[in-house]
Image (cartoon, rainbow, N blue to C red; front, side, top):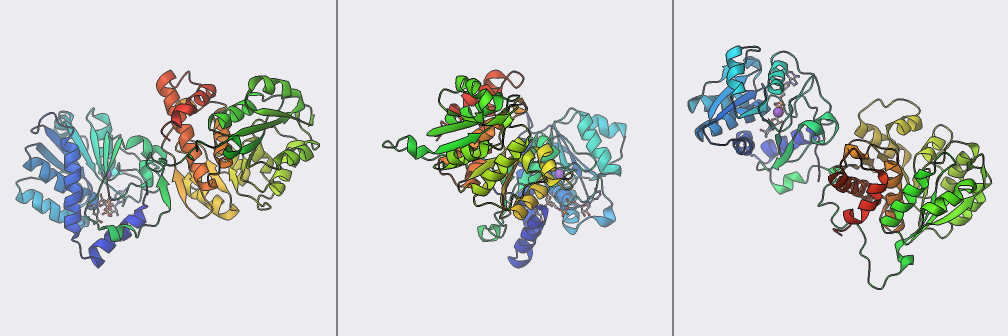
Length: 506
Ligand SMILES: NC(=O)C1=CN([C@@H]2O[C@H](COP(=O)(O)OP(=O)(O)OC[C@H]3O[C@@H](n4cnc5c(N)ncnc54)[C@H](O)[C@@H]3O)[C@@H](O)[C@H]2O)[C@@H](O)CC1
Ligand SMILES: [K+]
C-alpha cells in the first residue's frame, strides 16, 4: 500500500486544483462526506449528539462541512472553533458560511467551560478536525485544551485525515494527540498512520478517494509503502509438483557460541519451517552436540573455536561450506571475538550469494569492517541498539529517514527492527511492516526472523522482496501465535511452529 508524505499530498492537491481545475471546495465536500459517514457509523440512532472540533486550516474545513452534513441528517451537532478567525483559510470560511446558511452556529471553544464539557460528555462521537497534514509545531493553547478534553471524555473520537498532533511524516506526537477509534484519511494513507505513536492512536484507518483522478495520483512516486495482505499475496514461490529439495535452496547459517545455544536452533528451525530445501548450520565445535540434538532437519557442521567462540581457524571451513550455497546468514549468537570478526569479514569479502548479517555479525561490523567491500547483496537486520553501534552514534532523525539514509549510502538493505519494522532499500524505497505484536518482544524472535529471511533468499526471492516479505511473514507467525497462546506466554519456538500456518495462504 503506497503512502504519501505531507509535501506530496500538498503538491497533489495543488495539481488537482490549479492544473486540472478541480474545485478545492468540491474536494473538501467529498472529504467531509466520507468523514460524516464514518462519524454517523458510531451512532446508535441518527439524532444523537456530535461535537466537532475545528482548527483554523482546511482540516477544520473538513470538520465544518461534515458538521453540516451530519446536522442535515438529524444529528444534534455543535461545532467548536479553536483557531484565530483572522487566520482561517478561505475554504474553511466558506464551509463555516455554508454551515451557518444551513442553520448552524459555530462557537468559540473555551477551555474549561463546564457547560461545553458536560454537553460533550453526553455526545456519542467527537470529531477531531483540528489539524491535518499542515501541523507544523507542537499543540498549545486552545487546540491543546481541545485534545486534552477529547482524551478526558469517554466518548469515541473520529479523526479527519490524521489525529491532530501527530506529525504526518513520522508519526511523532507534537504536544498531544487524541486517541481515536477511527481515522478517515484522504487519497493516500500517511506515514504517521503506521509509525511511532501515531500508529497507536489512529484506530481503524479508512482511506477515502475525494475525486482526484487516476492520472494525477501517479504523480506520487512509489517510494514509501505499508506492507499489507495484498502486497504479500504472491510472496512465496510455487512448489512445482515435480520439484526436489535442490529447488528450494541450500542455505548456510553461521551461528552460536558456548553462551548462546538457542540462537542457532531458532534460526535453523525457522529456515526449515519457511521451506528451505537444505539447511547447513555451522557452529563452534563445543556446541555441535547440543545443536545436533536440537536440529533434526538441519545438517550441523563443527567449526574451529577458542573458548566457545569461532576462532580465525573457522574461516576456511566456512568459506568451503559457502561454496554451492544459495544464501548465507551470519551472526545470531556468535558473541564477540577476533575469530567472529575474521569470519564476518571473510564471508563479506568472499560471498557471491545474498548474505544476511544479524546480531553479533552486525556488532562485528561496527567500526572496524568496511561493508562496501563486497560482491553480493547484503541485508543487515539490526534493532535500534545494534543500528546505533553500526552508525557509531545515536540516531539523530526519525527511524525512516535514518534507515533510508543508511541504505542509500551503504548500498545494503537495512531491516531496522522494532514496532513497525522498517525495511529500507538502496534505491530509496522504504517498506513499513504492519504485522506483529508485543508478544514477539522476547529474546530469540530476531533469530527466527533471520532464519526465515535466509530461507526466502535461498528459495530465490529477490533480496528486496525477501527482506520485507520475511518481516511481514514473521509478524504474521507472531500474530497467529499470539491469538492461540497470548502475548505473555508465547515463545520464539511457538512462532516457529506457527510459520506453517502463516505460509498456508500461498
Ligand atoms: N484541497 C486540499 O488541499 C484538501 C485538504 N484537505 C484537508 O486539509 C488538510 C490540510 O489543510 P491545511 O494545509 O490548511 O493544514 P491544517 O488544516 O492541517 O492546519 C494547519 C494550519 O494550522 C497552522 N498550524 C500548524 N500547526 C499548528 C499548531 N501546532 N498550532 C497552531 N496552528 C498550527 C498552520 O499554519 C496551518 O495554517 C488536510 O489534512 C485535509 O484534512 C481536504 O479537505 C481535502 C482537500
Ligand atoms: K485531524
